Length: 580
Image (cartoon, rainbow, N blue to C red; front, side, top):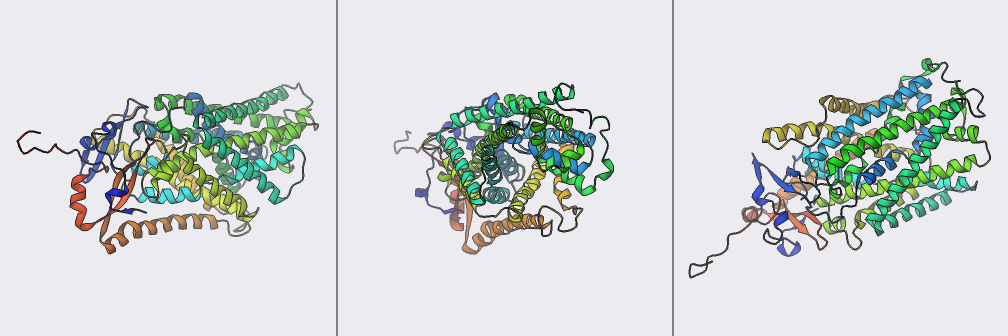
């Protein structure tokens, strides 16, 4: 992972050349831990962080194109994918009744908002660091040194694919023209769509964000259309004969629910809201980030939650509970057919779902690229220039290419069915574990900063929200272990339902074992230790690079460098005549 100690291998710049990024004079000692303080150009608030963390880029090489509307659209595009068009039937099947389904959607909003509050407080601690979870886990758990950056880097690179939405996009594009297609034709179109999104994102940060905003407004318009049409149906002004069929007895079916069904429904519902934190990956590209996010992030979640609930009202106003459960169509398909008739209705729905899926591809790719870039800036993976540089178009091309390549593999390699479902479930479970650690990490950071006397954050979450979020994320880790109603093979796959859980945990353990060998066993055997240094690139990008320093040279290295890896400021040499 690291290079050998050779001053010619790294571009190190002294404080005299880059005074804005020099942090050595501001080191804060806390036992054997050291913290730095830096003020970025995007915020008047300082970023206090453990010195082992990736250096703050005081002037973002990605620019400052992210404003209120962009953050709103980034969140909306990831939350509103294809789930709202199909998930309502799954949740109804799990909980049994329409009334309980509506309550579940509101509970999902409360759970999501509690974790969103945690993200807002964490962002206010590090207002000049993009990367969200990458940064928050790095800073919450700095010991063992480089452990969380290493494990999270491995997890994030392996699972940075978006094959499911690309495949769904292809499916609905073919459905628009009522064209029959083979599995390989679907894969080919999915690859084409994903390659198009790659080209859009790589060519220009500003234009990719403008596309995200456009798709965000289209999605909101779509849900508004369904919501308003549903209210009109409920008022009795359409061809639907009995719009009150589910509302006259909303609790009918409660007794048919199972514990597994209710658990599975809650998991899918929480995933339907996933994405409210998407914009936090771009914090260092936002001017006055906390002021912007404290309004845009909750607004996006409240808006989407309101439209989700109204959309469900629309679905349940046009069809009975039994029709939705027994139909092979998705809930939105039933709605469009009954309200607008069969002629052209399904085609219009397919267009809207395809647009929604493509908007999701763009928004998630933008966010993932920032997370991967920040992972590369931590120095624990090779080739920092590849991960960090924004040349030639001011975009993180390296991370984009990695995301594209892994998604390509995931589109081509696994066949539909068990293998595909297994991989999707496998990618979600480690994420749940890290989400819980992130919220626990907020408590750790809060107490540490209070002990060190650091300034209070610009935003502070309520304690009840933190507690609620911990319980919600703990539930997401424990609930998947509950056996399905159909027995050990009654889940999404034909083999043991918990296989992906064991494999997910096993992958994290394997990352931990690799870390022990890489950072401890092999260095002791070969007689060196890792130290971090600052790598600066022509476009203004900055990252850490880990180098192997022989044990005999450690005292000299530590004397010449501060804890963050900067060269220490040196006093001018005295001339022979006594002058300077």
